[in-house]
Length: 319
Length: 282
Image (cartoon, rainbow over all chains, first blue to last red; front, side):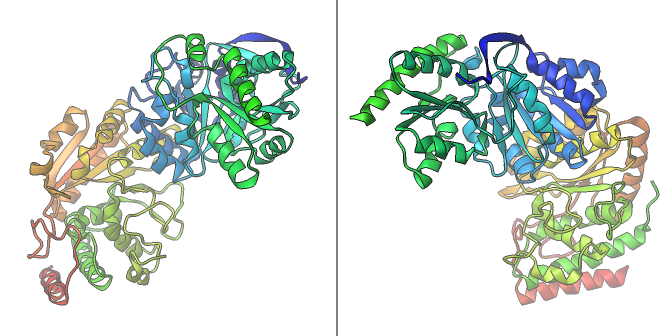
């Protein structure tokens, strides 16, 4: 596999807490907004070090988003925190009007994306990629590991305009070697050159997809892998190059298959280079509650299920 | 804060603006006129009397911010901004024409002086909270005025914002409410009764004054008290102006109609006549 990856994945504890604190040290214009989830969204380190730059709005996300737009108008860079559902689905109209329409320099940080919340469908941000991707001018980022989390924060702060980031917390896997990997907004990363079957993957699905690729290779299937930490803007050239060199593409995301990465790829391919595409993720349903591993297995997003689905899709198009 | 226009002068300006509102509504085929006429005294008092601004330098960092929450009050805002010199008054004739920057609802960036995109009700007090927090964090002394309507207080976000403004002790934030007692579907008392509005703000730990909102003397003396006390006590302040829909034009006063008014020649002439009489009486 790619030399960008560590030979053995490592565990990293709360990379976001550290990265946000470091960003606060570096940039006095960064302010942090929270909604009664300080520890849960890992803003407590920043809050304790910079209390004057940290505002708790209580469990009132619509007001928090509006206030963020006001702070941004005055040249500050608000990083707005809650669980993914509560910075997207709940205050959606406020985000659309006061942030997206105004191209406000507001950064929405949604903790526990997709099936990673144990609290069930009220807390599982499965439609957030779709909701945020459809807002004009929004940048949407779904990092895969601790290295990306650490590297994306300065990039997001320096990037003008609204950004939505899906944020993992607590024990986060480190897949990329920080010594050689470089995150760039909008850039896809080729982890295995395009092959008969090429995976297009974002966010927490990278790890199980890497494992699925190994399973398929062991069976003799030629597998490529393109990692897309930025869902919008999509790295179109990278996707088109992958399409040009692959028989089939398989997108994998920790989200609904409607509106997120798979949809973005499908839209591009339909207009530029029709290619068989299997979209893996949650298919038009709400999930139940449970541990992430249980849920990923239940909904076909564990390595074995991903490999099986991908293999069958390739076989269907190889006949 | 000292007023830079005297009360009598402000009352005169409000009548002048009423005439302009009627003229523009007639010439351009229609406008949200009833609430423009109820709120024009409050808006005139704040924008001509209290907001420190430099129309030639609309982004002057130390300007007071005036945020219009119900974007449907765009026309009175445009009338005042053009009178202050933010843009030529001749532009008013293009109001809501296709391609004109003077859209039916006021949006930030359309013309200088419009600070926020209102229109989707209940959102802008939150933006005011953010501006007030930013001013305090940056150590700047300007004030944030937010113009609200009574009808939009149905929106829960307003109360989220009210709680946070009190929690953070935003003495640099003043809300002004045009309480004309009407919303789109009819009287607020029938559609969704949010009274007692002033007491609700009091319960949210704001400093509140409620006065007849078409009485310039009452409005200005209340604003004087609120602005001084808010700064001294680190408390957000709100002026509840009890107003009359269509104020100054007899056939519109307190009527359900004219939410969006299209005036025929005869009605327009009658309105102008009454407002001229008001002018002469000053």
